[in-house]
Image (cartoon, rainbow, N blue to C red):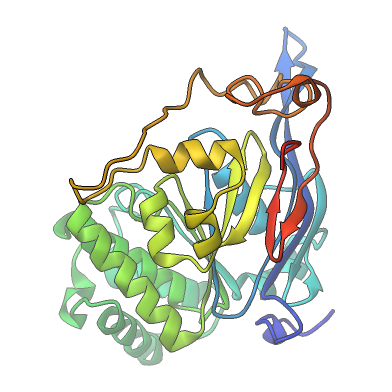
Length: 331
């Protein structure tokens, strides 16, 4: 097996590369629990994340964003596709073969309240990955945990506290410290600030950006909040009903979006300057069921520009400008 220590990316090799990733959940019905269909939560995604880069993955609730993050980490098994970590194919590795690579990919969960064991002290929570992987024990582990606490803006004296003794922002800092414990190259951040107050969100985001500069981390940053994604990401993938519909660098996507879905998402973002006026167009209708997605372009049932070809043919994701890809017949 290839050496997982080389799982960080190089100029020629991305930290993470995903090719045609699919995750379909079986729908079972009846007394015998027979398969009656599939939920196409992730339906053919391809993207890459370079060393020290943040890719923002955005979309409405239920579009499959969190499933992408968990499938990339092999917390749930992919239905099809390829996942490469630092150039090494980890898609079909067994649990024992995957274990060394676990150190190179970690996750920050959405809810800092339920993601921490209330019966464990904070220091034990952060130090648990070190014990599980046999990286450090005893005094050495305590020193490493204290260092991690200081790095994320907590005091080492708080290591003996329980999760209920911390605020929401502090708990998320504990989650970040736990993710950093094994010095990973990739961190999947699944809505890491959505449950926090706005002022605390900014603090946590700035901390994540500082850690990225200092440690060269790569982030897959999952969020429904476009303002947050614009703040932290270098590139952005817009997801709708299991597929990427637009993929571009941050500036291109936010200044000149090409897909109607992206346009509608951006038009709904609040503008802090009251002197700026713009036409707000809200998304109409509900997200279709991923168990029975519309034929053709999945977005045509809510798109104000849809024509006959949109209802009949699924548009491929293609590059229409340098580095700017979109899945739309009209572009």
